[in-house]
Length: 401
Image: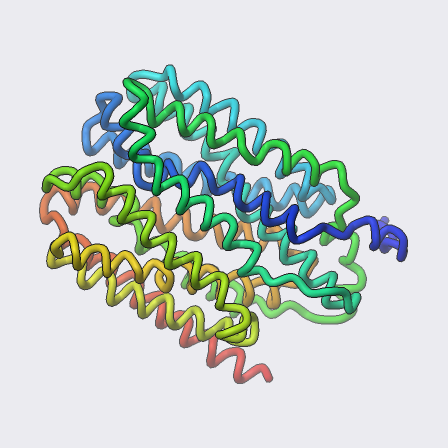
């Protein structure tokens, strides 16, 4: 039997403040500020070869690929998005702590797989809760929330951690990176557990109303998930090997941290202004076009192995390659999927990105060893394919109007 729709009092109880959501995103992204620039360096420091580093990263992506749809589907089915988020944060923190003492390929690979299984669902679940609250407020004519201004707290945390991460790692001998990773994974535990104690509306509770009001059109949803996954997966070369390459050509750890932080700073500015200056959800498809084109320009320029000053300029394009693509994807997917499948759709999109990253990371591990920075041309091709998908989505949406 279907669950009854929430009453007016229950709906009031379900309200989540923008501050709580901002803290959730900020704490969840603390781990990313260490992992993105330094996780491959940590693996290499534990004695893994370049091919082993690539394989471990690929294993983590496969784990996310399998875990995201499973966890988000369970969360939708059993009305437990917030509870699933809390459980995943606790497991991720515990497993990352074990990684500090891990040695050898198989110990590291197993722990990374389990850790990624738990941690990979944090962002899609957070996105689902946030977009659900944004939609609920809009329908109830309550004060609106701006997703970009909430999400920017996650980017701001990444920026701060990246900016100081390199210096902190140099102060901690031995397992400095692993220790900081373990500490960072503890950050979202309290805000996630606080959400789990709230009566948050679930897509299942609105299933009857949603089915009556609209019929979901799956073609643009599937195309959006695949195309967005391609564009985000085109970051594989950058995520996996940029830090190692910069170190190999003599750039300092401090420069690496600063370069990553600059990209995130530009991402922060974009998230803050995107909603009001660029139209927010109204221009979701434009955000997608801009993101794909930014990737084509950025990765194409990286094939020339640019000088440090030029490299810093290219880092500013992260506002387009990641932030614009992410914002457009979340806005458009939330509108197309609706509350009934919001968590699952976000999980599918995250899984598609993980799948693309898995395949491209494995390919890049071999290509980088053979052709170095020229492997960025593979990333250019992936972004171009994603752009073609966005163009097709735009035509489908215009036809359905």
